[in-house]
Length: 216
Image (cartoon, rainbow, N blue to C red; front, top):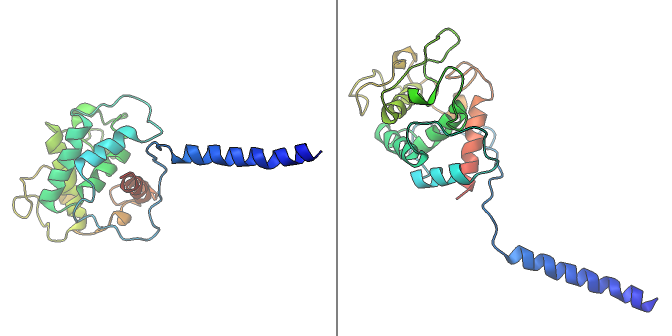
């Protein structure tokens, strides 16, 4: 009986040592979502916190992987770089805009009325009343249109889709429909009829963005 009672602590000690050895080994990247802080203001206008390389790495390594095939007209590395560049030109947070495009396109799998060849990463013009979403000649112009549209929502100084006040010539075909300019200065303001009808539109963007930030 004494031998049986003494064996129990030995087994527990061995298990603890085994567990600690496993914990000391390398850990795979984690992509457990970190929810956006409720009510935290996240301005649309501002600098990107993430680089294009970071966005592309998060996009490739996160789990679970979305179904379907990637269908954008340029590789994800190039696309992320376009968002950072175009966002910086207009003073818009391009890294969050990249995440917005993920929400809009289903991880660049597209579907429905908006196809990958359209270079429309934000569903511009894809409304219930409009059977023909906007089409852009290449990925850069599609990203530029999205960034300009975001600036129209966030910046009251963006009074016209022209250069100036914009950094580039007008690419957004729906810029003038945003009235008044600057009506939604934060990502938190989107949804409920502003850019999208879904009341959870902003939180879907900000939760994914928080995940990308935590993936560094």
